[in-house]
Amino acid sequence: MKPFRRAAILFLAVISLAADPSFTQQDPGIERKVDQVFAQFDKPDSPGCALGVVRDGNFIYKKGYGTASLELGVSLTPQSVFYMGSVSKQFTAASVVLAAEQGYLSLDDDVRKYVPEIPSYGKPITLREMLHQTSGFRDILGLLLLAGRNFEDIHPTPELLDLLSHQKALNYQPGEEYLYSNTNFFLMSVVIPRATGKPLSQFADENIFKPLGMTHTRFYDDHSVVVPGRVPAYEPRKDGGFRIDWSTNFDKIGDGGLMSSVEDLLLWDRNFYDNKLGKGTLLKEMQTPGVLNNGKKIEYALGLEISTYRGLPIVEHGGALFGYRTELLRFPQQKFSVITLCNVGTSNPRRLANQVADIYLADKLAPEPASSPAANVDSQALTGWYRDLNSHSVVLVSGSKEGLNVFGTQFKATDATHFTANGDRAEIVVEHRPNSVTRLTLSLQDSVPQILESYEPLKESEEKFAQYEGTYTSVELEATYRLAVKDGKLTLASSWQPAAELQPTIRDEFEGPFGTAIVFRRDAAGQIIGCDLFAGRVRNISFTKVIK
Image 1 (cartoon, rainbow, N blue to C red):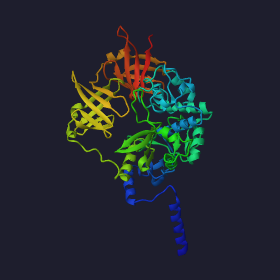
Image 2: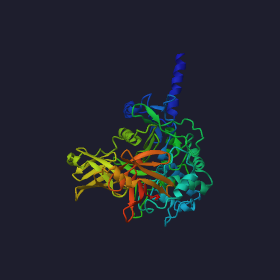
Image 3: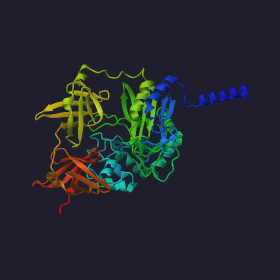
Image 4: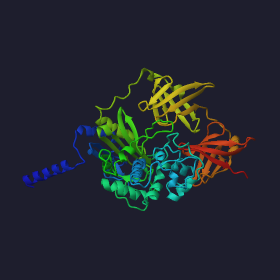
């Protein structure tokens, strides 16, 4: 090749790179630090993550770490298309706001105006309350699992509406609490077509994806559709390697169902600084936090969390389903965002995104909270089993010189009876009560405080387990549970699921599968007549014992 021609080609390549409006060069030393954050995934035999770092509307770094398909040996890239999980919710919320701008609906409409299949619970439940996660609706994903239905099967909208139509109660009265529920956003996939005449997938495509040029983004509401560039997801096996953890049958949308890529999400992120959609209300509506009936402002807005990280305001939301884990983290004042999309269930994209932000925003972030002298409090005496007085669920608390580990979160001591985590956004207060009972009051930013009390798990005999045996039915779940004693253990079998062992906690209460708590009911004569089920985002499902 002649020197002039070689120089000309090199010049054109440089011009081409510089002309790419979505890419800005930076210090390679910073890139090496970022690569180190993702080093555990950057292997040809491991699934991993795709990353996009955005400043002023352009990528300053983007890269894939690990493998998109272990079967085909294809590497992850910023163009790889992921199932987004709950990151989808902000696009559903945006669709509702844009539909309201066009006069199809109002955010303050009662949901029963569009979905009369939902029972009346004594007062209206507005679309706005649902988008703020304050409706009280039981979680549809939890209901599916508790009903014994195969999670990976096709679940048409009429089936899901039928399940919701059988719910005789809410978790709480609308507006009284914040409790995340996928039902709220799933129902928007019913509201949008009934209000606009178009499926949510089409409405979002016409009003969001096409106007922004998001050509690789769609709501996956048809399991027969081919999605170019889609990556499968995985979970590690105990004995090494990975197993597949994804489903092409799962085509429920609204609460999830979005397919997108790092590069497409850049276009969505830009729109939060220069809105090109609708008539001008979108950004304000989506980023206005909800307010409870008592006037308390929560951090959940419309499919977005409005919060802070190390002293800086952030707007974010994550997603998780099957082996997919996703996070879109925005620092609006710095016009800086981190997009982290992973296809392995053990990844933690929010933590990874925070670590990337720590590198780029090091001179703007507040210092990590310094350990106080009280952090030397030895909390080993608090180790043990605790029971939630409201949900009846149980948790093993681990105490040490480092603090308390509760629900996988490490709380540091500020004094002998107070522990905090996540920059003081979560707090535990310890109270020693009569009869050697220890009470932990767990307070989170938006949620109602959880009261946990220590207890000693019962060691029931096979003879005592026999009183719980029998068949139990639930009208709300349209499900039948069969309880039997096997090998000295009380077991529960339902539909296609194998029998699961129940662990006794206190009298007439057991810990079951999927984090459930089963509380048995007795009549005046002391005979078991039924039970109530609690499972996180699903409260107080009633079962009746079939008496023969």
